[in-house]
Image 1 (tube, rainbow, N blue to C red):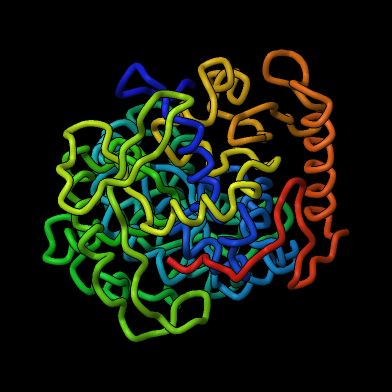
Image 2: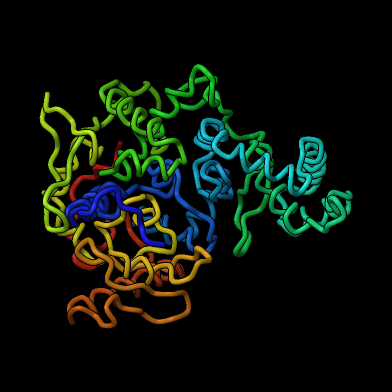
Length: 442
């Protein structure tokens, strides 16, 4: 699944290093805990349940797998389909307003679901009644228990003479989460239990206020907040990147990013953010351009400098300084899980790898991505679950890279197994520099 390009020249590796810093993958920008890590990203792709702990631990170096279990058990983190028809992890605080702001982008899927499988409003209301009644009686449910209850309630009957039960099961699960009735919460083995959403903050409690659904008075503001959080945690990004991440039309994504630049100049509300720290001035966003191809550079636009129509990037204003101060940590070897945001969070991934690398990450048409190894900002290998390393180009590029890759894999495997207790002054990863004060607030 090669990343689409909007021009013939690849993005500079400098952009990949900057994204590594924005993503919280170095000590200076790492999050203090897993809830803060998710909050700063706004959403982290999570369709492979087993890969979720990996995505969170690399962004919260002091955290353990037990911390992740506890965050879901408390209801601080949830798993659902808030956008793009793809499963994501969000904080409970962000779930409803994000879902409401982007729900319209799956309206065509809803219409097709009704036409092809009979998943209409009446069926969804009956499914919701069964699910909520069972949750009231038993608490959060395994998916198999919920599906069996729907079967027993007669919701899997033939449609137009055909057995559509396999489709109905998935469509009902997605539809009721899309519409804010159900959500996935506590982990049980390699599964998130299904629960109701009554205890989650409602859609009017988000940063944009009330009426954030498409056509509502708060929708444009909600899109600006989405764009701000995305650019601050993923930047440098383009309008095409945001459009892919959210499925917003490119013109609307471009407007949202321009609104986000203005939003970054405003004072944040006087409240406590998800990291438990007093909110203050938001980190401003700036526009930038990439110049010189793969070996080129990233240049922020100066005050009053006119922005060109194509190739415009957005990022946090302090990113050039962060890159200068923490280049060594960004260039270090990073072992990232399947579907990590550093890879799947963009339309243009040419700064990270080329088409051969994309095929190595996702060799089949089933959309299943492999865990990746990144060194000096570029993909060097993948490590399929249960298998050994597969090197880009067929062999390790050097003895140093092979050593650092193996160390990075070993260290993360220990953390995922809960065998590596990390202190608040966590030890350095391969190639990382000594941590300075945390700069993760966005």
